[in-house]
Amino acid sequence: MLDAVVVGAGPNGLTAAVELARRGFSVAVFEARDTVGGGARTEELTLPGFRHDPCAAAHPLGVNSPAFRALPLERYGLEWLHPELPMAHPFTDGSAAVLSRSVAETAASFGPRDAGAYRRLVEPFLPKWDTLVRDFMSLPSTALPRDPVTLARFGLAGLPPSTWLTSRFRDERAKTLFAGLVGHVMAPLSGFATGAIGLVFALAAHARGWPVARGGSQSISDALAAYLKDLGGEIHTDYEVKRLDDLPPARAYVFDTSPTALAKIAGFGDHYANYRYGPGVFKVDYALDGPVPWTAKEARTAGTVQIGADSREINTALRAASRENRAPDRPFMITVQPSVVDPTRAPAGKHVFWAYGHVPSGWTGDLTDALERQLERFAPGFRDRVLARATAGPPELAARNANYVGGDIGSGAVSGLQILLRPKLSLSPYGTPHPAVFICSSSTPPGPGVHGMSGHNAAKAVWRRLRQA
Image (cartoon, rainbow, N blue to C red; front, side, top):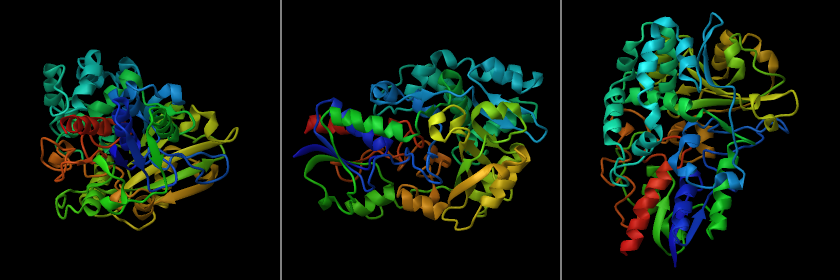
C-alpha cells in the first residue's frame, strides 16, 4: 500500500508529492493529460518553433515561493530569466509607469507628487520580505507566524480595498499601475483585501523580480517531476480519475483539482456547493514577426505589460466581467513577452506574445478584435506583426484544464472572504469530510499562482495525519 496518492500533476500536486517523498513517504501521482504541468505548461500552439505558455507565463510568486526556494529545482533544469524591467504600464501619451526591481526607479516613474508616498508604502516591508512572504503564504494551522507584528502591519495596510490604499496617491499613474496589479487576480478594485493583492505583487518585484522560466513554464513542472522521480516517486499520465476506486490503495489521497471535481470523485455531495468561481479569461497566444511595437520605450524591455488607459477604465473592465456578466468594450489586459529575454522561445528575429482579457464565466464569444484594438492604442502596427494566433476562451481553457471552471484560471473567485478562506470556512482548509482525503489545488490558501505553496501546506497536513496513523 502506498503512503499517498496525488491526483493532478500541476505545480501544487507535484509540490505536495515532492514534500511527502522528501520525508520518506511512498508517493504516486496520477495525471489525466499525457504530460505533467497543469497551469505551468509550454506548447507549440501556433507555428513550429514558437513555444507558448497556455496559462501562466511570468512568475513573481514562483521565484519568491518559500516552497520552491527550499527545493533544488535549478539542479533539474529550472532557470529564472529576468527581463530588464519586471513590468511596465504604458499610457496613451507614449509614457509609462514601471514596476522595477528598484523602488526608487518605480517611484520616479509615478512622478514627484507620488514618489514619496509609494516609497513609504513598500519600504517598511522589504527588509522583512522573506519572513513576511512565508507567513502570509502559510496558515496558523500549518505554521505559526515568524513575525506576527510585521504580518499584522501588512494586514492593516492590505485588508482594506485597493481604492483605499491608492487614495494616498495624488496622480493617475500610480493609481493605474496599482489597479492593474489587482487585476491580475480578476478582483474588482473595491473588494476586501485587494490592497494586499497589489502590495504582494509590488513587493515580489522589488524583492526578486517577475521572471520567466527559460524554455517556458513547462520547465517548472518538469523540474518538480524530475526531482520527485529521484526521490522514488511515481508519475502516471493519461490516467483519468473518475472515482476513488480508480486509484490504488493508499493511506492518504491528495487532490490537485477543483473542489467541484473532488466532490464528484469522492462522493462528497454538496459539501463544496457554496464555493464560488470567478470570471473567465479570453486568451490569445501570438507568433510575431518582430517585437511588439510599443510606443512607450519602457514596455519594449519589460517581461510583463499591463494594458489599461487609467484606473477607471481598468475597474470598468473588471466590473463588466465579474459583476455585470458582459465582455468589456475595452478589456483590461495582462500581456507577457517572454522572448525579450528568452531567445529559445521563438526562431531568430521572431517573438512569442501572450495576452488575455477578462470575460464572464463560461462566455462563448470572441474577444480577439477587442483585445487587438486595445493593443493598437499602445502599440500601433501590432496587427502587422502577427504571423499566427491561437485563441482560447472559457470553454477551451476549461477543456484543457478541468480546474479552470468556466475559464476561471484562478480556480475560484478572489473576492470577499474567499480571498482568505477557501474552499470553505475552516481552520483546516486542506482537509475534507473524509479523514484520508485532502485537497491541495489553487482553490486552497494561499490561492492562485504558480508557487506550489498550496501543495506545500497541504503536504504538512497529510504527513501529520500519516504520522498519527
